[in-house]
Length: 526
Image 1 (cartoon, rainbow, N blue to C red):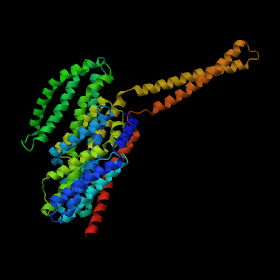
Image 2 (cartoon, helix red, strand yellow; image 1 turned 90 degrees about the vertical axis):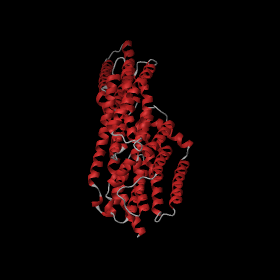
Image 3 (tube, rainbow, N blue to C red; image 1 turned 45 degrees about the horizontal axis):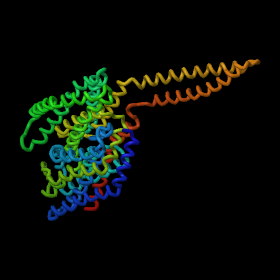
Image 4 (cartoon, one colour; image 1 turned 90 degrees about the horizontal axis):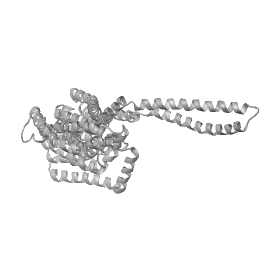
């Protein structure tokens, strides 16, 4: 799917649901959160900042949905494995489900791991800091989304919490060890995502795409790839989904997941064989075998993303709620259902209203995607997010997904020699046509220099003028093709530069904005 196609899609969406209608629905959700938080906590002392925090949390959650949707369904939509409408429906359902079922563990890291709340003795100061963090992160993310910059929502809230914490209690409040781990994860996430995605793509190319009989190869290996996906997500869902009922360690969950994957293998294999018998031995048809697995991968990745990134919206809100309700700063707090609902529903609403805007970044602006490449990216993003969520580490899903896109793009550049071959052929064609043109011109000069010209010479001169005219145009076309060939890259370097720049500036920008907001709140309240 090219950029023009997605632009047309966005315009069609705007026509069916104008910008004013989207804004109205977003404001309606914020109003509902405001009314509920006021009605349920109206009698609570110092409830003003709890209500404000709930509104800011809802605002932040919608921005997460608007910005991070591309990480979950961008590859699937970009490869045309699913339509925009179904992508949004599936992602919204699984995002909310992941946030409700498995989001609490990462929330604890966001809330307590970045700063040491024990260094703030005044609960009001702590509440102001968390409020500033929420608002600044949401504002920065909203701005970045509006200009089409694929920034990390995790970076935004980490920068917001850190900046407000420093403004409230100085640099010593920051847990620099935790920040070091988080900073390391920002580098490790895209690298690991790129390596895993490239590994999956290389395996598929080597064992399926590069085979003479691709259909037989697909019958053999596609069921295994689906089984690996089943094992990974089954293990994760067992660990996260039933932990409130039965505590299961990673080894036990892995064994159960493996049994489910083996069962899935034997169920999927005849389906793949049946589908393979209906397709041609071409790359395009073999790609179609990955459509359904890619849809499942996108859905399950949305679940993992909801579990991981809901913390960015409700972590500070949970801290504000605890400080207001307990009139102090606790070292350990629970996550109320209504707080989790604000994050989960907000992400789904933001995704549905504003999600398509950044899909073109991950789905088409970095590199061209098909089902095989998109499947590799989704698997890499899912596995990396699962590992991070299992460890309670607030990594950036944006970095992981984009790293996966980079991985498949650079692998294509490394493996596919068609670009260099095309350049070589264009160069040879240019040189050949130029030599023919020079020969025509030399012959024309010779004939025109003769004192006596026969009828045949005149006819040849006329013919040469026509040949030279045609050949000049061919030489010009060869030159244009050669220059265009030199510009061909599977990974668009301008997109890479833009994304890296956005990654670098997000944390300091959010931190500075958060510190400014904190001092503004402190000045108003003092």
